[in-house]
Image (tube, rainbow, N blue to C red; front, side):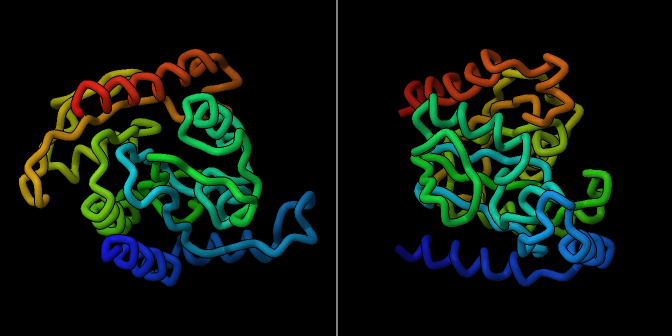
Length: 233
């Protein structure tokens, strides 16, 4: 119960963050000008917090909100093509109550899964600067401390390298590759238990439309996450 309250407080801090001027200007400009298809929609236009099961054993970490996806809806991976690929996979694997995510109040529930990101504001060109990711890192560190997942699924190389950085592991020491899994230990957590870092290509259209990431490949990631949980219970 205390962890849930602390997580709620953390999310409030994330939503109110204005540390990075470039990102503040961009996310708010996008929310004002909007995309023509969403001209009548009120955009979120703020940092996007994580969401899901606060006691989850699996945490998925993406890159950053999409300008007209999460920056519009206010929920991770909600309202864009990446989410349209992600949530059906989570539903098939039993981590989500439904195969689509359209808004913050659509009734979607995550089971044993918490979804977050390395960056919390929509960045120009979908490319946050290293300094901006550094500013956001404390939020991700705190989420990891509060949720304490057993398996961390890094959706993309940037999320993968950010997790390694948090755990004090040089990025050059572990290779990023779809399906690669590595044990990680954080001695600062209450229980000194190994966590698994599981790498996946990001479910962006750049990967899904080109065939770099297929439905079968992505389903394999969530099946592997299940096996890792079972093997380490």
